[in-house]
Length: 125
Image 1: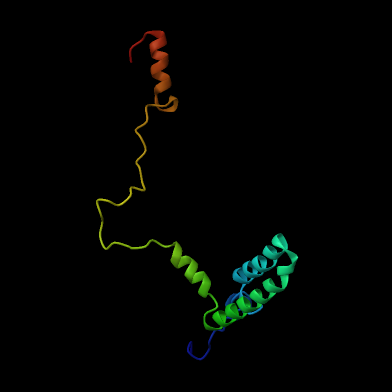
Image 2 (image 1 turned 30 degrees about the vertical axis):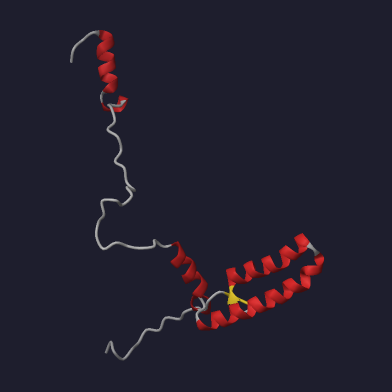
């Protein structure tokens, strides 16, 4: 009886579709057009047509890249940030990332206050 009824879970398209702008990855498209339009404005207005042409060629490259893999540049960015090699075992030359905390003296809450008061009054414990 349980096999007769199937449960369907609707998925909203925004959860499954990649975030693309003008056919390319969102961050890469914004970075490309920001560079292609801001650099000519900061240097000389005569370079604006050159920036638009370079942006158009770059955008076509981003579109073709996104057709093959919509998250290609994100994967490359994570790949570059990863460690160059992961050793199969521990190494004596590996950097130490954890240092044990130093041993602390007694605080006021753990009996330090009582010892101080006993010294002041001259009574031994």
